[in-house]
Image (tube, rainbow, N blue to C red; front, side, top):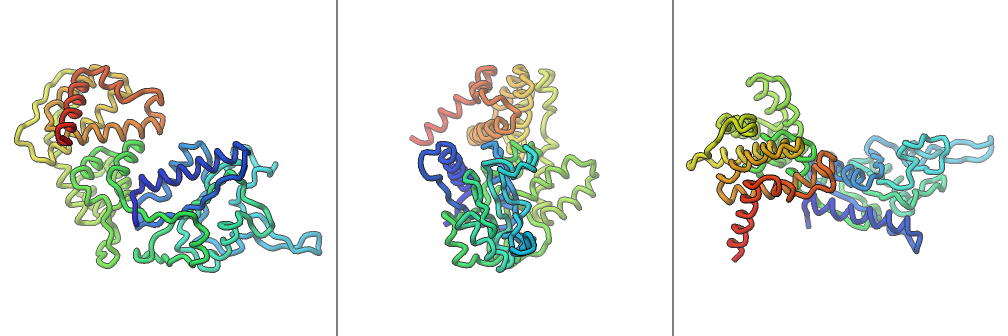
Amino acid sequence: MDTTITTAKGIISKIARQTIESCKSKNGPVYHANAAMYSPPGVGKSSIVQQIADALNIPMIDVRLVCMESADVQGIPFVRDQKDMAFSTPSWFPVPDDESLDDDDPRKSPYGILLFDELTNAHRQTQQAAYRIFLDRSIQNGRKLPDGWIIVAAGNRKEDKTGSNDLPYALANRFAVHLHIRADKDAFLAYAAERNIHHHVTGFISFKPEYLHVFDPKHMKDEAYPTPRTWEFVSRHLYMDYDDEELALVLAGCIGDGAAAEFLGFRKFYAEMPDFEKIIAGKEQYKVPNDSNPGVIFALVSSLLSYTFECVIKKNAEGTENLGKVLLQIPNEYLTLFWKQFKAAFEAKQASGELPSNMAPSHVHRTSPSMQESFHRIRKYLRSTVQ
């Protein structure tokens, strides 16, 4: 059974919180549950683990077993006092009691996430060397992983043809949960809001979500193909000073010829957009054409979303109100899209610190009558569709 990356993030977040809370309470055993995630390339497994660590204000240590040998995992043997063989502690292993470490060193923290990324690509001997860590939470020299640390693993699937292999049964049985993840539009759009991904990208994915992740290893023709990861690369390219020919070439080399052609075609709809800076300043009014192409409306929604947050962050109530007057002209099905994405983006921007944590989404309604009217209209519309 597969699941969305949002659900996987929620499950691992709950495991991490329970581990930390049970560790801090000191009233009984500490809750530990190793989690493993699998997906095609570029879905964002590593990113959500970092997001979980950031939300809990704990460090994450990324261990790439694919780049290691067994001694890198369990420690290198050496002779102590010219008579006894001992094992070193790997440089990545958390050691909160090590006085030689700086206080800001992630290994010094009593709480954290230990991510074993690309586990399915690691050499079999290296995987076997990690058995003890996954089950006993210790390494060869007897040092134990601090109770407040959570173990998470991630990897691609064998059918993705990325050099991955199925986990040995003995290793797989050391995980309390295995999560098979698929790309998810809503999760990507929320992530995009947090990372300030270009609104042309979010507009296109809203318009054609089937292009969020296109990966079929049996019929791959291009080295490049669209994934949540490469769409973030596309966003970076859009801020570069490319001419049209260069941009077309770069995007084809980022997401493949087909996806690049579709995206560039969608971008032409933005040429029909009004001057939002003038609308915000009250110097221009805009009437949404009744016969607009759906692509134009999707472009309009993504633009309104981007400029609305710009006004909210700058506390420009007048600008928000002027944008709300345009929003009121949008058909209900697209207005639903705006408010759904607004809520997710609002929460993401609070998580990133762009918006105050004590600000509620209703703040926008209270400061803008037109925004409030559009919100109430969509609530009434949604109730009518349910009935």
